[in-house]
Image 1: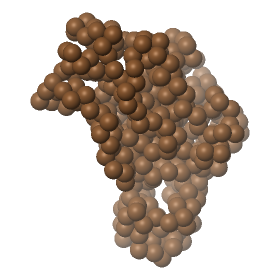
Image 2: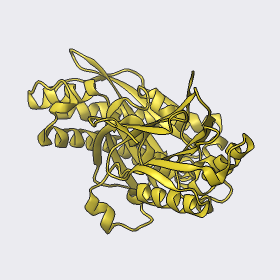
Image 3: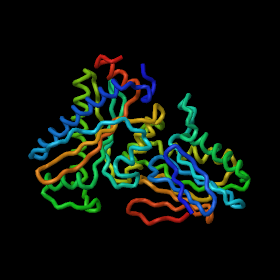
Image 4: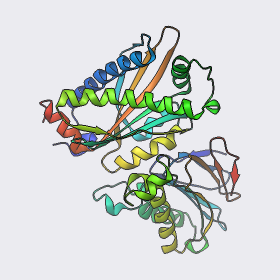
Length: 205
Length: 166
């Protein structure tokens, strides 16, 4: 039984990486369906990162980012945070709504709710792969959204899970449309007990 | 002259000409302490109200009720006096969720953590008899905090907002 993220073995981490890979694949498929055009994805980078390093990995604590936060409940107690940089958000909006967005200042209510929905669909794709692989029941909350400095957005899940360890599962993906390559970040925060349950369902006690 | 970076769950001291900075406080709280006579300053970036909720956690810089006394102790070791210290605080925002969500949710809920962090910081400073002379707290946006022990000015920067010098 692992008590903290630091106690996870290399095998555990490889399994989490694989869950991340499958989730990212599902997310790319969901995104192509939503946008009505093929979206390719390079092999995602999946790492356990110290929370002090997470903000650096997304462009620095002050990088202006769109954040979507979802609460996980049921068999797994956790949170998923999905961070979209400006390019990613604008690519999606321009394809989806035929607009010509180029800065966060132009975001209207409609654009915000479109991004919220994209975050919802991508996060659901991850959760679905975890649930299918493990046979666990996972309930996902309505997404909460905000645009602000990445570090400030990340403070919420980091605070919630700051008492169980100093690391998180960090997934970096490169999505490619026919014209553009954009990056997104998905961060899974889970109670250690939930992580142990996931690992034991996969045959790793 | 250097700028000393204070991370998450971290605290650092500085004397002029050095200055302190902590980036992108969300629901966390930044606490700037100054002894004006010696110009010894400190900045802490705390994540949670109390170490009591997390028994076994050894990082005392994570919690308001342990980080602030630790910072005071370190400043005293350099020659500062608690009786002269003043505090300026910033952060403790509610980054997600509508105000309605926060007011209807359980007080222990994550949506209210900013508010609880601010309350814990205020209570800890009160117990140490250190007056809060300026604050920029709560609301719903992130803040970067700079503190200059030479002037005692706490500068607060936020996205699409005027820079505040407090």
